[in-house]
View (spheres, rainbow, N blue to C red):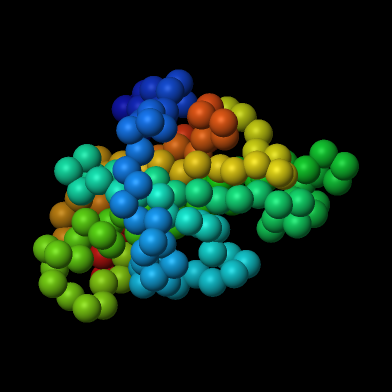
Length: 172
């Protein structure tokens, strides 16, 4: 477990991918791909937009817009709203599922590909997410096969890392 903690400490320091290097090839297909790979629907669909993905770099970028009425803000905390860390992890998990779906769809040649998050290896929260902004979601696959995958992920606000996570997915 020590290597996970070391990796999380590294991930919380600087963005995995600098914003000027983000892929931008998914904007027009975003709604279609979210619906294809995620069973979630509002209010639990926590990715608003897919920006792009890079097959060679095994990475994906997406966005979540945080309004005053965002899920979880009502009671976290009254008069001082902050997006709960568990929702940041869920956002990162959802975009990670889309990444593995995209990576595996060609390999498995299957019309219906079900990818599910199975384990949070660890998470660090190093900043707050407040209403009125955008959370950028960046995920990169560390390793995967046609059964299990592992990823590293970051939530960023204004280019700063506010959360880092490592997780696992399973293909069913």
